[in-house]
Structures are given as structure tokens and as C-alpha cells.
Image (cartoon, rainbow, N blue to C red; front, side):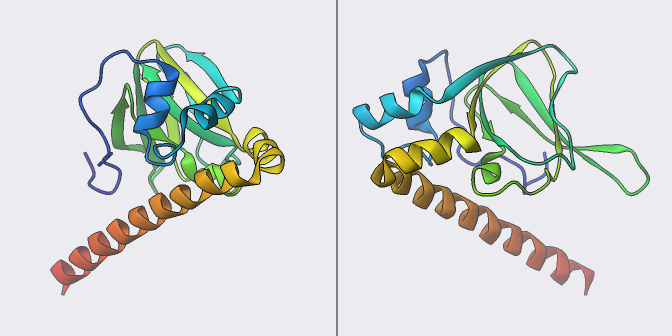
Length: 167
């Protein structure tokens, strides 16, 4: 597994409720019960068959996903056109969270590896929630920014190590 794409928040997981899963995601971990209930109202369940794409590299990002059960490969197309596996994600893992901040094109493809159920949080729903409850929105967006910042720091560390090896 590529260290940049490894899920450093992963813990041993068992079947859990949506509320329990949301609380395990760093972006939502500080929300109180009532706030989690508001968030749960905008979460959508999606089902995927083996080899079915959740999203494709280059498509506009629309939201993040939490794996309820099953598995998802994160793949990126190489310059020669082949697909490179960046990481494999399992129940409790999450991906695509950057799409909650902007609609930039996806940097990778997400594909189910087995029958998979995902909980999706989509940007338009989150923007509506933020308009209705700005305080709750701030409690989601600030941790999201911290998460993106942490991933950027890890990327910078990895690039620094690669640069040092190449010298």
C-alpha cells in the first residue's frame, strides 16, 4: 500500500451504526448527538457491485464516502494508460472528503472490489446544512480543513524523502 494513500485513521472495525461510524471519522468526531442526528439526515446509502465504479478519475467531485461494508480500490491512471492501485479501503474507511470543499476533478478512480455499501455525504446537501446551521457547518468544515492539512503535511514529508533519495 502506498504510504500517501494509507488510511492512518483506520482501526479494527465491526458492523456499527451510522452514528457510530460518523463519530469515528475525524471530520465528525467532535459533533454532539443532536448534531450527528442533523448530519445523518443528509447521509445517503449507496450500493455497488464488484468492479462498479463509485467515481472516475477526472470527474467533478461531489462528496465523500464512508464504507459501511465491502471494499474499495483507489486507482490512478499512469502515463502509459494502465491503472495503478494506490490503496485498498475497507469497512469504516472514508475517502473523497476533499470534494466537500470544492468540485475539482477527482484525482483517482474509486472502484468496489466486492458487494459494497457506502454512506455518502454530498457537497450540495452539506452546503444546505451549513446555510441552515452555520455553527454546525463550522464544526464540520474546520476539522475537514485540518484533515486536508494533515494529508498535505504527510505528502510533503514523502516528497522530501523521495527528493533526498534521488540526490
